[in-house]
Length: 99
Image (cartoon, rainbow, N blue to C red):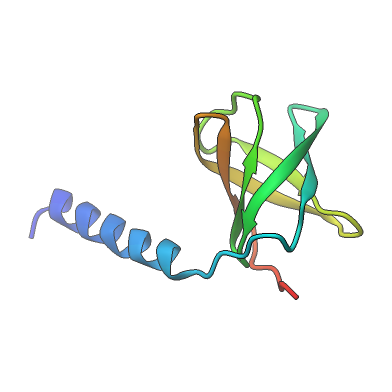
């Protein structure tokens, strides 16, 4: 098996793992996204224990680190997994408890 096959196989496994994480809608309505030193109030579209999807017009780079602050919670380090059409997918630096 070549390196390209190993990388493709790992990507497929990671894709399955991401999609198996349950997404919750309506638990959190808004968050503050700290991006390049500025605070942005953003709607939260969904959240899981490993990440969240928010709506925003900011233009982060893939892999860029941001801070996410949900109401009455500490700031969480996250990195930009994807960004398109005014939506941003973020992965948390550590798993969080939802409830």
